Image (cartoon, rainbow, N blue to C red; front, side, top):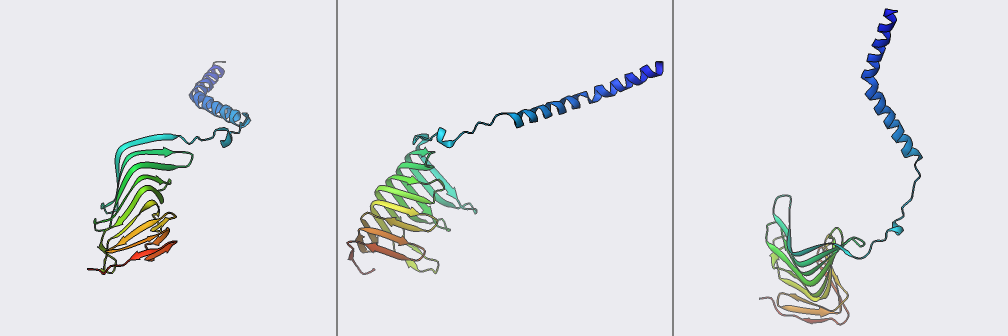
Length: 207
């Protein structure tokens, strides 16, 4: 009788050791059962439409980006910026941007009354007094390229493709020469400028 009592007590002690694990396992199984059998309520994105309201603001700001080598690549200044979640766009008032080449030399200055950029900053639209200036600098072959300026009420920049477009009248100054047209399609990589509409040119010799 005594041996039977000792056996029962030993089993009880062992059960007490594993009881927390058994309880945790039971809770886990219960939670799994609840998740599997809970009613699923589908929430459509249409039930929560995004309004075209700014979800954050920036005022009197500047943003800098750097190359992997630590050289300054771009510097952006703005009076005010607004981000819209429904279109994933950023609108900037009184924008001014500086671009620098691999040597840290200023190559492009862009400014406008207002700019609209998409989420990954691959497209930037400039509105009102839009200006993009490429300072004189040597190209990859070491040949000095004249200063070039694009000016109009609208400029559409495709950053990755290095293209500049406008469906509104544009004025281009290259060195001492000046061109004007009703629309523009400029490919910097191919060094091709496509001017359409009423095209005028005032060519001056390079000094």
